[in-house]
Image (tube, rainbow, N blue to C red; front, side, top):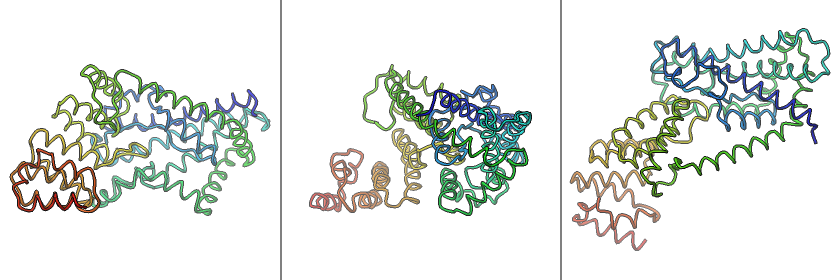
Length: 417
């Protein structure tokens, strides 16, 4: 069982590392502001307040897990940059480079702090040695040109435009690709840590000092992890009990007008500092319940733009989730042609998506395009039985298709399936 002193030391080291990550993100934000994205000021990213960058799961829990597993300094905080507001490709590259530059400055400050210390056996020396080595490792890690990391962000603006649609889906998996290299390619891991060790030694940090500091940290950090996990679970449960909480995963729950307005106010406050795809999707879902369709479409478009340039772990919401919300809103407004184009886009990349085919059939029915509607409905009902088979028999949106001679045959076939 770790001593109280060890637990306190682990906590201080981790807080210091977390603050250095926030300085890294501040570097991104201040350069983005200089480059034309003034929204970072409204989001509070220019205050040097660590809480502005902190997300409990991504800034605390995940980085702690990876430090426990092998000393990998996982990027944890995040600022949300409006890249379309930046004035040029050079500014876009500069925004990505600013984070690693801030990390380098932190490393230099730590090197200056450890230089006067003579005894490597003290907790102070081991803590600074660990932090300095982690900052060096974080710099190397962030500059690797894998989609989702700053190294890729520096070169991305200069890559051919035709490459961008192919690279976008990879970005949210970039960090997992990196971790896969650490765990499955021994030469990559050895080469990385040898490079980090060589630079650390230039600052006077022997390899054994980092190893000892990491061992000290890992001995107490498991308890710190359990405490943070308990805090995260408790926070999530508390959040669900708030009067303004709306769960977008439960579309059939009946919410009162007062509850929805409170939820909208809450998510608008959150969006001031965390303009993520998930938060935008949640806002759009609330607006759907409030039947504010124009605002739904504007919010979804902003989420789509955000999705196309999203960073590591930003969102579990897929592009098709956003398109479904957009298409459903068009249908509610009786803009059936626009709705059709949305579901055609979904089917172009996911031809077996039965929900998209079903919605497409409804659009054709509303437009009086009977043959096209029957073809789309056949696609939706093909294969194994799903809830769509029962839904279509009572769905008034398909009323125009019921006069087609093949409609009853299609329904009878599904009833006997």
